[in-house]
Length: 386
Image 1 (cartoon, rainbow, N blue to C red):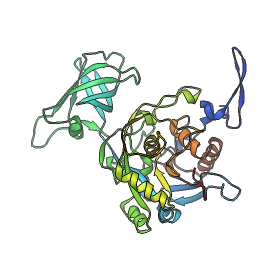
Image 2 (image 1 turned 180 degrees about the horizontal axis):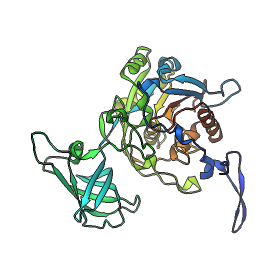
Image 3 (image 1 turned 45 degrees about the horizontal axis):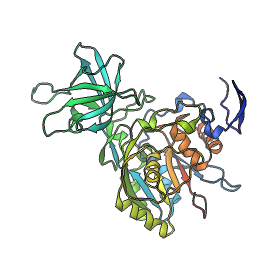
Image 4 (image 1 turned 120 degrees about the vertical axis):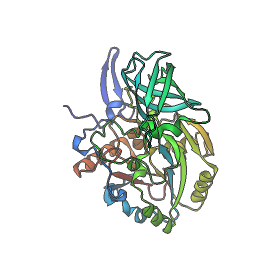
């Protein structure tokens, strides 16, 4: 395997001649090779015993080298008056297994609710699922020898943007599908986690409150109640947004020119109280640290008109190098997949080439990658907003 191209621009031969390609805008510029054994299959126990690689957002001669810490060191790495903004979404049991009326087995991954009990979902195998097809789901059984509950859904149409299906679920009056998912669904771990022993609650943050995500905001998995208390004791404040993590967050970028990539919309809420906390933090000279890329998209999405405002709705904001930051100054994040929009977002914060160099150091130091892996803290440059 040839090593990925990481430095500078390169010349590409096309049908019309030779053109120079900017690697910051090219998919090939976001490649790296990860040894498979570094893909974490289980979370650290306790949560805050994971490793933490600390870097500054702008490299200088005296601060460019990453520092190696443990996540529980976070209170000493931040300053009193800083604000951590967290995503309080909660992962729902979004993976369901059922059967067609013919008896054929079906796997369904719920993505988002479009209207009352009508959900966009990925269906496997999906090619033969046309409008009108029915799926029957069996529940996990009840106590006292009660009959196994059943749930049915009907395919309404195909969604061209995702290749998924719109499913109308037949739910008892006064109920919602989300209320029934504990009986019929499973927490969906990412496909690269194949041999995990993790319990469902280990794929939830300790502050998860708002059901609706199909994947965890993984940067928040490292926090424990005790660590949150220590942060508060040091006058490091906490605020919350909600982004229900959906297909847009983890769907791969497939276009060679990343500037033409279109993010799938995800639902976010940035409440008034959080906006007020951010403004008060900035006025007092504190720093706004996003816990996870979903928080970045929430805050920056709510500031697209130029200034942060309370917001409730959908965003398809795609952040890549060249982005002009409006709110976020620092970031806590896990290590992300090659060629992913998340890798591009972090590159916009500290530079693509520098990020790839930091990833190589993390690999050499045997950090654990992806959802159950270790974390990185990107601190704001001294005396300067990003």
